[in-house]
Image (tube, rainbow, N blue to C red):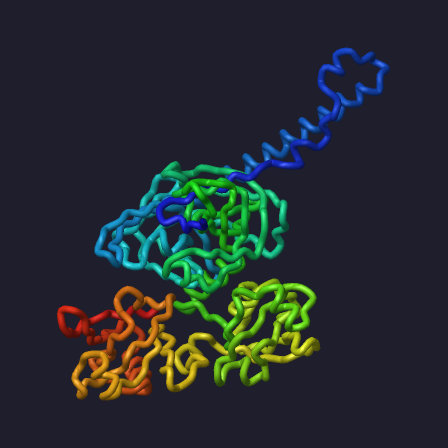
Length: 488
């Protein structure tokens, strides 16, 4: 079972591994007591000295790194109301960073640490030197579970950014945070794997579009969410986010968001107010099996198989097709669908990239001009049959014009007008507030009867929250309810 740490995140404990054992003699130490001065076994003493010296130097280096980075790590407490109207308290960690283009001091943490509804006054940040702040401003990105908080500090120590692409399996890493509320705790471990995707249950998991996690054996526990993963040079290489655990505690499998992705999200939020993501316009196969790979004349499971193409998308315009297998993106070999999603979303919008695809057993190169995903979300429809409704991507709802016949089947008057909710995207922020068979009657106080009406009303409503009015029929009769849709 994989758990996102909803309250506290524990620090990754990394094992010192090979450096400690280097130079240690394989013979038992008792052998040295019986060796003569001219015995070659006395060379083992030098080996022990060298091994001990290496261990001491490594220990001192780690101590220097820990002392250098801890002032950049903060303890975070928040209080907010859930969708079930319950007040919860969260505790987690964060790290101070800076952005060259935007002056000031900023805290990076996990979005789930501060919640979606917490006010600025309900979030408290405590620095290593004891100073406490409420954030002046906050930005969140649902699709990476990241949040950025601005603090009004005269002085602070931002952590240096590291290059997560240079991490290799086996590299030593440190983590600092507040496991179980024990702030400024430091642990050590290694990079166990890269490019991991998490299969978390519930709506919050499906929000995570960008899944390219660093796996570490560092001890991760409640309280370390949002805390930094650090290389041995004291640079930020990841933000701790989840654990895989049967017990609910550390089982030696923790996951961190790579720093290159974090930095891109932070800079976009601070410079533009939102994260810009490039868009290819395809649906990919999350269960690409060996059997399917062989059927498509691929030697083994690799790459990302395309299952659907969105109309008027970059993929459609470039001539990509269903059952194409994307083997390479802009010169990078594709591991799986999550790998491709991350590479696309982190590519500069408008850039032309070359894809190598396998089609009917033949490799071919295809150039694609990537678009802005948010613009595509506003205007494109899902690749579904018109008779089955249209997906309004910003809302995450598939809607169908409501005829008199359909209204009667639903128990409404034949004169009822609106749009029938056919399905709800699990990633939609309306999940839990809207049900299938609800009828959308108004958008921003404007009556809607067609999909075009909905799009026009959303476009005219500006960038803030939008009032939606739905009609519902249940055992107690029919009634209308108002939902506030929050733009992500």
